[in-house]
Image (cartoon, rainbow, N blue to C red; front, side, top):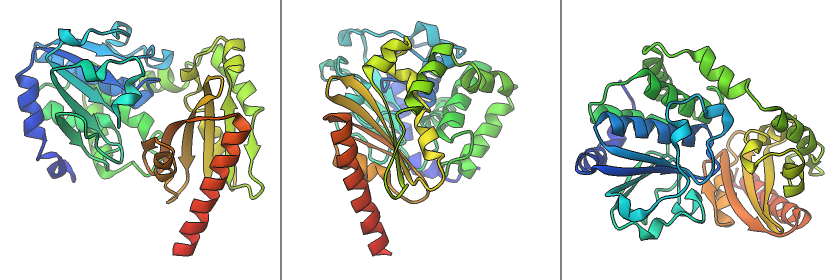
Length: 333
């Protein structure tokens, strides 16, 4: 039924064995959780609880308000003691550093496993359940759930549906594969309320976020050829609107939506001269290579990294890198 399930068969039984042999499990995802991170770690937590495990779900940042309707979202913790667990499961995260700078990853003496769909599997762990062609980490967790013989309940289905619908851009992105649609159909068969899920995700924004968006859109910068668009959010802008950096989720798509733009960039100020840099692209332009060259990573059409400098310096540097990559792509064809 599922085209790529065979791709996971090598490590799927190993992951099942590790999970069945554990009792106290910590589930974590990347900081500033998006729909895939939040949906995946909450679904994984529910699956483990169905197996009778003692489960803690961690994120460095609070779960965004748009995902608080998911079961377990209000129970996510933000501090942990590594000695309390005999298994760490990290979902939707291509590198342990993305869990958060205060997360004591190297202090865990237990098994450490990753479930992910980013371009390259993480090496510093005991096992990877990895599929770079999966639409979302939630898609891989769906197969793991079945391998563990856990019943698909409505709360699990809601979390997995959130994972897939957000990472496929509501089934608009190229990551929308036949497998993603087949899994979504299975989730719908449980009777989940799609309108309730989507209204929570897309039509439940706090007014502070809309006020921040108004400020962010005023920062719009376009390259001379109109192929690169950039937006930014400074700490002053966030403070003025009483927002966290997580509230900028999705803002980058406004830049990509501009006619003629091939690459959009979003800068979020973390410290005075330290920024989180997000990329989005159209078509075949691979922004994961741009992010990787700057110490980050991601997918072909969505990637991120952190970078130092002023907004103008970073914008100029990245514009040059992107244009060089575009020129090389054209030359290759």
